Amino acid sequence: MSERQEQYQTQTLTAETLAALAEQFKPEHHETLRQGGTAITFVSWNHYVERLNEVVPNWSMGDPIFREVGGKLAVGLPITICGVTRTNFGDEDADKDTFGTAVVNAYAQAFKRTCAMFGLGLYLYNGADAPQPTARPTKAQQKRAASSEVQADKSTEPLVRPDGWASVTVTHPDWPGMQDWLCKKTSYYMQDGEPNPYHMLATLAKEGITEVSEENAKKVLAVLLGYAEKN
Image (cartoon, rainbow, N blue to C red):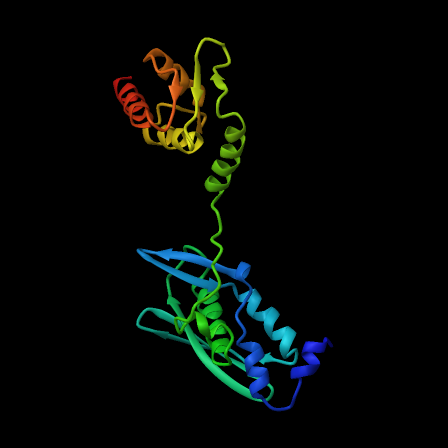
């Protein structure tokens, strides 16, 4: 048993134990989820488990309670800490089948809500300032970031098509992101489902554009979109 566990391991639920459970999670444990125009800060359920195991290793869960109300699956989950049992509910559309099942989502929500009744993550519900959340980058964002880093090192070097005849110098700060957007927007610059930047370079060269910079980005976009529509 760790020193922290020994400090709060009592037969009764003390103020010190509740304070330890209610401590804010680490900044890197916070994530954001956008729903419509609202940004929601949350912490994944596994970090709640880690906190419980750290502070009160003898915590336990009771049998879940399942109810279906108005097309929603409601799950109640009792949690016992230091002899005190509290229960809260989570719910999800009964026919949900997009990301996680209705049971899994409602269960996870009930778990975190019951934990909040002991102070765990309660600040996320009551509007208190939380550490800066860390949003999970998408695969596309990771790819663009990696491409941007490479391009930053060679921002003044010309991009040459494999056959050697079309060369364009790129100094635009987000050329990888712009070319990805264009390829997907027009589908004309896609090859085997992937963006084809060399096809785009050839088009720019044909139109007399030898440099892609932040200043002429709009002109580049108009040329490429117009060329794709004509062809």
